[in-house]
Length: 290
Image (cartoon, rainbow, N blue to C red):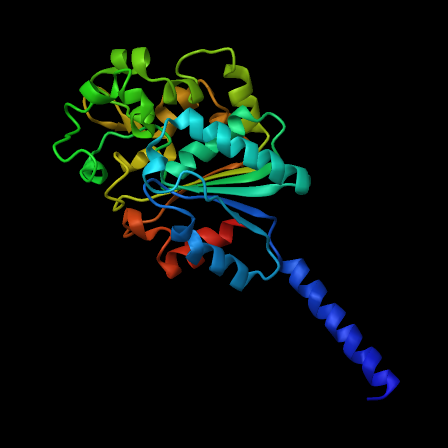
């Protein structure tokens, strides 16, 4: 090969490398759902890297399987340590994506980390306003029903479980506020010494993307994925009519006013399909990883 040809090929190789770098996403950090693990998110990892070669993906492998039922704060503090190390490597910012329970825990992680580098947070069918359905728990608690689950979850023992930490019984709000050590605090329903930080950390986001759908079948009500929730009469109050938005308790109204809040509703998707259906990943998730 002549010298000119070699130079031509070298220039072409460099151009190809630059093209890959141009289309690579920011680093993406993924947090899996309850009773699963990092392996369950591999389709999403592969699709990200297939469509955008060169993207760095961190697929969290903490608290897999049964350990995903451990106390929510314990999980959040461990994940926070991991995110801090990732932010040290990528000070220009990352995208944080959490599925199901992982989306709620991931949101709490960035709230307790005031110097986080998360530019965009994507919540994929997560119980952001709480959970009031037990179908997915029958493997663990075969006889558990939503109506009486508060008797288990609103106890000292029940608060040792992640589900108990975000169980939100609309008919027993007094017990929810008395016993729940997690959800009412990160949602600033109850004041704490960290209330301002929990809000300010959310306001650092360039974009908050909340994805859910009416055919989910697990997140109950499904609108919880958008911060909507039941009132005491079992009517679902949408996010923008609830105090968490109207009083801007965690910055949702401010993000919305600035065009940084995105509520996405996708019909026809079951809860266990969001991260395993290639069409859903390509058409619903990937477009928001820019």
